[in-house]
Length: 621
Image 1 (cartoon, rainbow, N blue to C red):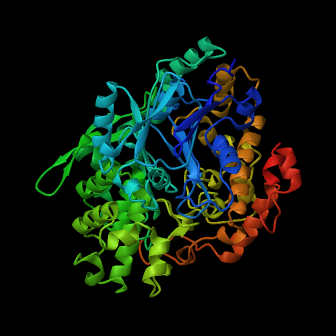
Image 2 (spheres, rainbow, N blue to C red; image 1 turned 60 degrees about the vertical axis):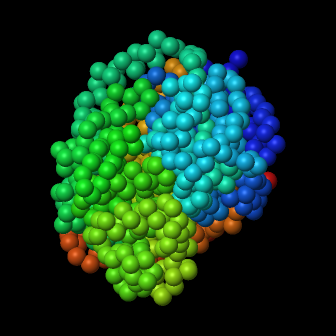
Image 3 (cartoon, one colour; image 1 turned 180 degrees about the vertical axis):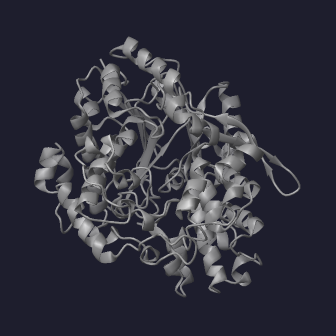
């Protein structure tokens, strides 16, 4: 019998042969790896040969729920996708919300491991423990909305949930993503391109089974508690969504502007959460079993732009990437760019950062109208931003080059354009300013996926006096300013982010404010395990270390744990409260971090003692 909360089954699919098999891991596997990130690290090391082409048949595409995924409690709608990343040939993982992850788990499988390449386009249909591959030639080239409508009609399942790619994934855009339910993106590391390379258009799931629970009454009690109390901490998130913090960032000089040249944007009030709520918002959406409903749903229908509400609306990252970072203060244009990315299946961060990179190159004279097809690609040109986004989606003109990502584009363009690339391990920066948060800067550098904010550190918590209880309970007692990177900051980063990785193991939304004690209690009620916070921290260390081992195996080293040149430069205007991150401080911090993780302080290679401590000696063989 499977561990409560799980099915005890992992589906393996060989697209080359069309064969499937079901693995039934032992109970200890689930407790050791939990799900999500843990499963991805395990299967990448087990299933992907060293040196495999990320866009070749030997790469594995992994869909994995977590302990909470599919359990009817707030924040349990997320799941993970993983593969060897086509951005940097390293560890690739992205996490998305919505309903697909819960549906997959209720359809009978805790994870999918997909290898090979189908001779012709196919989609995978999973329902009530059954799995079959179906032809998808008729879906190739369709947008995500067209795909969802066609597949649901074909299956006769109005409630089938889809994880899919659009034409961007088919065209192998390096930052193509996997879209759940039209508007929930597993956005980073280019996993939509991996899916496209396998001729896999979508995975459709429908399940009616309820997952078994060790203590169903306790789970129901906790679910009711959250329904009754969510407004105490989350009402602003419901009202404004993730764009609700834009004006706070603006006032602090931390709003990425014009390709991170500045930290303040003159048009911030026109693109903030309040402006979105008061102009384009027509509804609020949510994820499986969640009462908060923080997702934006917008509609635009005027002479300039038409945006359909089926594609949701822009999150903060999208508004930052296509708005302030491109110097654009038109929410209609930002919403159109968001719709294009959701329809074609592109990461809005990667796409927006590619456009802002091109805009700076244009303003510096490195790119001209001859390169842009006549577009005046200046910062602030909303219509040019939308058109370049469309060209990237279609791989037309300059968009074909930008679809390779800013790093590869700069290598082709030359002329000093590399100075305007903002990425780590070829993954473009998210919309968070590392020059005003040095713990976060360290996090960008050492993250296994490259620049990533979701499993990162938020320096503001340690800048308080006294330090908050959430950090003190992890052994962090000393207050440190945001722009200091010392041993106390490194310890806080290490402890805090090891806990933050837990969300990606559990399939938990980071915006849901379960306390650490509540999470321990909830996991115990689901599984029956007498789990502790210490055990969960070690599980996260295990997952991060597996990701590190995969990167090392594929040739990424300490030399790749670096920040782009712009992080050593001050803003050119605005509230100048940032402090550049010096290479010397970063190198010292990296050595401390490696040592605290029980990795070799000089190389970042996990030690034999580390592998033994985490019970993953097999991974270092």
